[in-house]
Each structure stands twice: as structure tokens, then as C-alpha cells.
Amino acid sequence: MNHNIKTDRLNLNMVQSSDAEKLLTLRTHPVVTKYIKRNLNITLEDIDRSIVRWRKENYLYLISTIDNNEFAGTITIWNIDRVNKQAELGYELLPEFQNKGIMSNAISAVLKYAFTDLEFELIEACTHKENLNSRKLLEKNGFYLLKDRVDEDNLNNVIYEIRKM
Image (cartoon, rainbow, N blue to C red):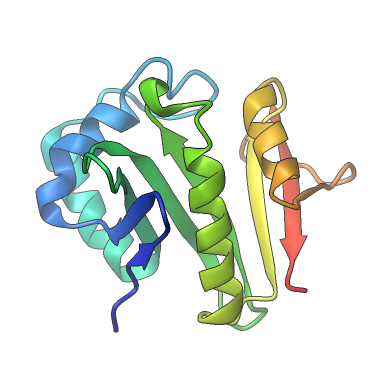
């Protein structure tokens, strides 16, 4: 089954092994990882191994622009619970592509796919409480802050959710 998604501005293609260098650049970029709790001492081999796992367990998309086919970032549906029809949304965008509506476009397309084709009922997203741009992005795309929920893996995160309409 083809899980790739296309919008008027973006191609969202499932990550391939050939994307490892792009992912390494993104996942170790100091601006991108400012609010993310992650080991930055990773290698291309680590990314290669992760890609194999991600492709089995998640929907990880490489975001590229249609006009210039430039790599901009990633967006993923992960922490999938098929029994309860819910998952988590994650995303990362290189700084030169931020504040241009790219991630909002990607989120909108991925949510449509998740709710329509994958039949999820609920999508959650976690972001650092001080990452105001990410919080605004989620709210702009219909997510609601869950004030009483705590991310046990990262107490600096806040949790948002959106339900299928």
C-alpha cells in the first residue's frame, strides 16, 4: 500500500534507507533539537538501524517542497495503538523552512490521512512547554491542550490532542 501523501506545496514520502544522511542532519541540528530530549551523539549507522525500525512501526514521512524538491523536515505518526485507534504526531523542520506554513500544511495532510485512511480516532502531540511556535502550530491545526495530562518521559512537555470529527 502506498502511504505517500501529496499536498499543493509538499511531498510527504515514507522514509527510505537512502534518506539517512538527511535524517542525521535534522536529528542533530542544534536549532531543531533545542526543545527535544534526545541523544545527539548518533551516527549514520544508528540512523540506518532506526529507519528499519521506524518503517515497521510508524509512518515517518520525509517532507520535501514540490517547487524545488528541497528536504525540509519530517513528520511522523508513531506510538500507534490500533486497538484504541490512537497515535502520536511528531514533527521536525529545518530552521530555513520554519515560519513559512510548511509544517501546518504537512500536519493538515497527515491528520486527514490518519483519520480517514488509517481510521484513527485520536491523535496526541507532545511539545516542550516553552516551544511557543510548536504550541501555536498545534492549536492552529485544531489540537487542544490537555492541562491535566503529564508526559512522564519529559516533565517539560505539554500534551495536546485532536479527535476525529
